[in-house]
Length: 393
Image (tube, rainbow, N blue to C red; front, side):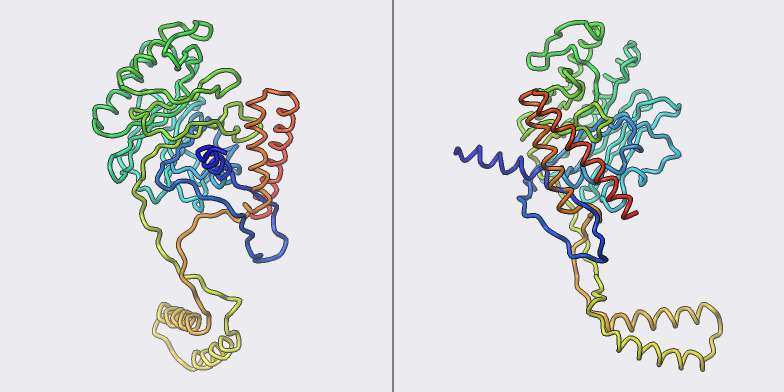
């Protein structure tokens, strides 16, 4: 077999690792599935049309564990300011989340979620269109990325021109940066292969032409070459540096109720990642319990015979003693900071991998039998994920 084919197969299989049923015993030893890690010298984007991020929140950890994105460009989040970002992206996932929510109560809205270790800067929100951007630094260039959404009903000249203005300002403010714009542009009448308008079936030609002109003005190339919703290519990725593209491929929708495929885009640029902080873990199973009992019993006797000026002094003395006893009788080890979710184990990883392979095959063959198999695996994955997440709440 060709060496390139072998390497690509290994990378594809590593993209979606396996996933698992809840443990019934306390503190089980984790089961690790051997897998190849993806290229750490690339930057991975996921473009997701959520159609209500809050309703899909419990499935986000599974997606993050499987696809391992660095940046998520989200559209149709349907979030309002009374919803905290931690309700959507749990703190344990290790993302900084920035949103551009609408002031009204209509659908739409966009977000960017960036791994904390990448130290995102220059986050900016458009006040006229659904656009949010941020930037990170690589070893050679700055990367500016944006999430954009055009509501299907916004075909008016004012919205189209505001979109163009927002994109051109992004370019003007970052002349030497790599620009990546992902999201749902809702322009299905464009053939991006040859940059032509195929029809006016869905929108007037002026709408499609507007986005072709924007891509031209940005000097950007559109990377998505497959349909993302039924037979239409609605989710797009525009980049000013197409030569750095490693791959762009579809992933299954985040849930059964989503009708937009996820777009995965790898950029061959190595970001600067902050070193994770080391932390101390107490090994309570190896603790000297007899020593702890004796030390606390001795302290209890002396504590009762002493007097303290204030309650604060009493608490400080008690706290200091507990810390000293813990350090003396409980062994520790140092580890790197790690973001994990407790319910994602080998069963769910394997199930997610099977679901992805079934999705890939169904798209290739378009066979009713293959689509039926994928649908069943998707439903099973969602059900098992829900059960596992609820058990660990």
